[in-house]
Image (cartoon, rainbow, N blue to C red; front, top):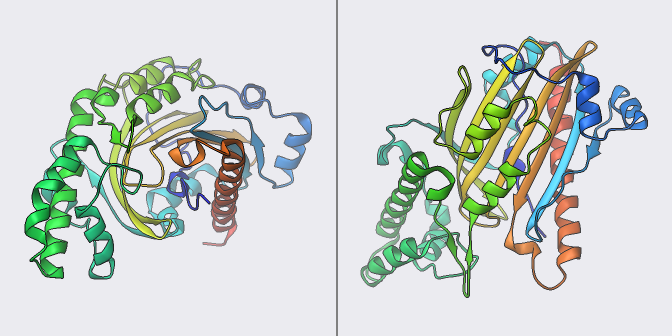
Length: 342
């Protein structure tokens, strides 16, 4: 039911090519213990299997999944694989994406937009109302309302132009506001009788990401209190993504922080705006050397209104199963690629 919920979030760790942080990274044994991975699961890991670990869900809208895998490849090969952009080739239904910088403007989103084949979606966007078809704030919905009267006389070309310009304005505003105010600057999505608050969802996720906070406390606080300055030598990235989710193009705004030293690394990633289907997502992932390869921990917390209400437990079970299936498929593909000859 919740197809491709967060498949864009599969982000492996860049282990050793970033500057060293002062905090101590956990040993492999400590990490296994932190995630309650038992000896039988360790045996499976060493046999090349993917194992799961529990991620505590904080409310009835949240889906939480944790996976671990041993990738039999040297650290530099994994780093190069990610740096060269080869990983993105496995992002299902990725349409386009772009890096965002602190001084982003409307032209930063020029490659984002509905195409002629997506004219029906563009029309739905212009006619959007409170609900779950689009994740839009009251202010954004009011802004769309101001252009509806004129669009009736426009041809498809003009409708695409208007819809794309307006959506780009929304994305720029959300990115700029997040950059200034962090989680408190994320505008809520207007539903029919209530609001969905992705900012609060992500704050809760940051507070409850405790497994790594012991080893990277400054990073965890920077993540929670962004735009607080992150620890020295932390790599930070912002991206926009346009991909197909549930057979519809979907705008996503993403923020990442990456930190590492000679014995391991950590990546934090949050989607602080998602165009539809789910509200927000956070990834916490870690990479540690393990014998002749690397042990990768990867967890996702994703909030969606689709699993709340009547039949919530069944919906959440189905949602977890779908999410886990996609995560496993992508991890297997990455593992296979890294085993392939140059």
